[in-house]
Amino acid sequence: MKSLRNVLLSLSLLTLAACGFHLRGSDLQDVRFGFKSVYLKTQGETPFVIELRRTLSKNKMEPVATPDQAELILEVVSENTTKQILSLSGSGRVREYQLGYRVSMRAYDLQQVEWLPPDDVQLNRVLAYDDAVILAKQQEEAQLYKDMRADAVAQTVRRLMRAKPQPQE
Image 1: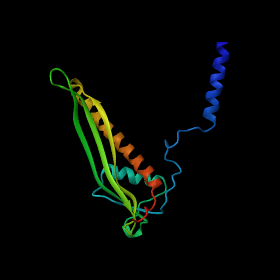
Image 2: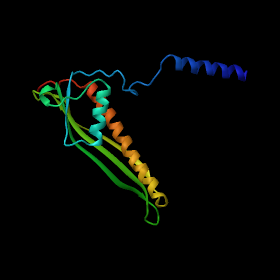
Image 3: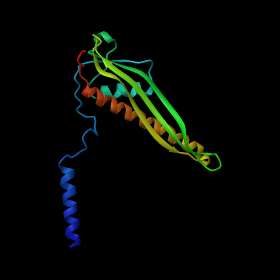
């Protein structure tokens, strides 16, 4: 009886894997945008902007060099990281930090018609801290910021997929 149950479970898992099941929105393949070209208006080449360019290029949306060539202008207004103490031990030592990452952006066309209103992508993570392993915690912090940046890029691309001209008021 137990072997029959294991065989049925294995067959159902195999069937699910073979059907091509995947979570919706978990993969940025076959992305379709409502515009043909984009210009990234930024204050500098930050790691976020570099990764956004790479992701757009991978999805067949090569950013253009000048705003005149673009159908859509994506303006990255600001990009900020924060680190706040979340909790202290009884002796006053830091136990946890809250790491924050925030990117402000907006998208519009050459006629200044908004495609995406000014908006923020805001992410937070908790970093458990220990004075005994400072180097490891610094590396973990850097990795958390890198993961938040990748998540912000994915959220930005998903927002660009849904972008369309907003009606004028």
